[in-house]
Length: 47
Image (cartoon, rainbow, N blue to C red; front, top):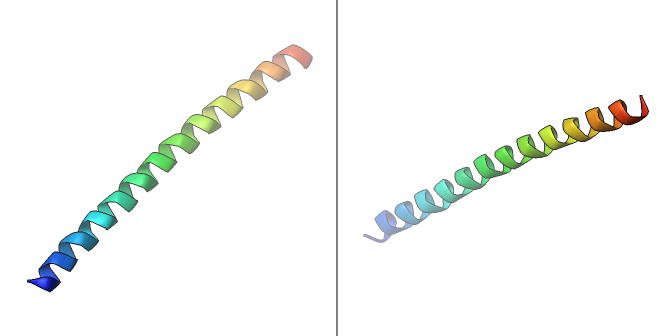
């Protein structure tokens, strides 16, 4: 019973880590898009 409990806790933790990784990936994608937008705007202004 204890090992089953530990397994389910580990699975929950792993799922949270996976979700955090996905979230981080989505966040860095958004940041990359913003960076490209800013660079394009600056190049348009000063280019």
